Length: 472
Image (cartoon, rainbow, N blue to C red; front, side):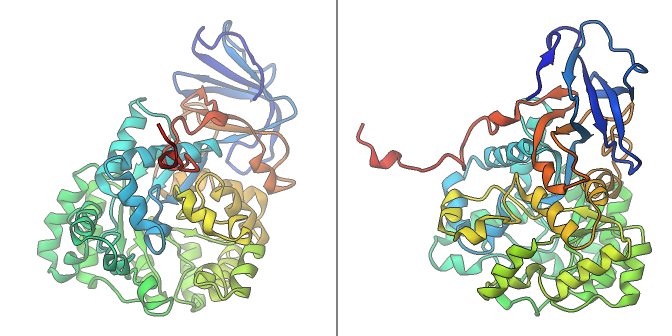
C-alpha cells in the first residue's frame, strides 16, 4: 500500500495525489490528478496544482498509478447460491446456522478486498442479509456496501425444487423446512397460485421490510432439476403487472430473473431496470428484434461470462455447467456487446466453502466465475475476450451499475459531491484489463481500507478445519 503522508487522525481529509484518473465517465484519462475527500465524499477533483490540499490532510501518493471509482458488482449472492444448487449447500447452512449474517459480512469483506466497494445481493435469506447490510452501514462491521433484494419473488428456498430438493433425502425435514422458510420469506412459490388482488398486498408488505430492490422470477429456476432447456413462466402477465406497479410505487429498482427468450421478452416489456443473466436463454439465440430492443431500451443487461479457457474445460469434460455461458449463451453475449447494449457486471458469486473448492480440479479453480473476491476480475477479462473494450469493461463495473440501479447521483464515478469510493491500481488497466487485480489502494466512504487484512474474522474461510482432531 502506498505511504500515507500526514496524520490520518488529523483533519479527516484525504488526498490521492499524482495518479492518472479514469473517472468512470469514459473520457480520456487525466494524468497528475488530485482527488480530495472529506466527510465521506469527494470534495474536489482536478489537476495537480489546481486543487489545493488543506493543511493536515492525509496524502496518498499515487504517482505512476491509476485511480478509478470503487467497483460495483450488480449481482452477487453472498451466501453462495451456486452451492445451494448442488453439493455443499446443506452442510454450509447447517454449519453456519445462526451466524449467516456473519458469513454475509465475510463475503462482503472478500469483495471489498478485491476492490468492490458496493455489491447488489439479488437473492439471499432476507433477515440475515438485511442484518449484515445494516451492521456495515452503521460501522459495526467492515465490508462492501450491500444493497439487498432478499428472496426472488416466486422462488422457494434452498431445499425446494428451485435449488436442491434432492438434499431433502439426506437431511431432516425439520431443518430443511426451517431453511426454506427463512429464505422464502413469504414470497415464494405460493404467489404463483394467487390472483393479482391477493399478490398486491403481499408484495407491498414485503417491500416495506426494507428492500433496496425487488427481484421477480419471470421464469422458474428448475435448471438443476430439469436442465437448461425446460423453463416455465412463473406468473401471468396480470400478476407481473401488479408486482411491477408496486415496485414502481415504492420507488425501488425492478430486477428480473429469466432463463428463456420469452421470459426475457416479458422483462423488456415490463421495462425492468436490471435483467439478470439476460444472455442465458435455454441455449436459444436471442432473436434480432429482441436484441435491438435490449440495446435501445431503458434496462441494463447483467451478463455472466466465462473466460475462453474455463469454457473450454467445461465443454471438454461435458460439465453440467457447460451451458451456463457457452454455446448460444456466449453468442448472445458477443452480439449484445457488438450492439452496444447497456451491460453491467454481475457474477452470482458468493462465499464458497473451502471444502467444495478443495474437491475441484485445478482447471475449475482458476478463472472460476463464482468465487467472491476474484469474480469481478474474471468477468472483466472474459468480457474483453468477447469484444468489450477495457474502458467499457470498467464503465460496466462502475457507472453503469450505478445508473442501472438508479444510484448514479451518489456512486459510480469520481466526481465532486459523490460518495468517496475509489481504488488505485499499479499499472494501466486500459492497456491490459488483467491489471485490475494489481490493487495498491482501496478507499470506501473516504477512508482507506487495509484491504490486505480482510476478512477481519475468518469463519467460512478459516481452513483447514482440524479442531476435532486435536487433543485438549
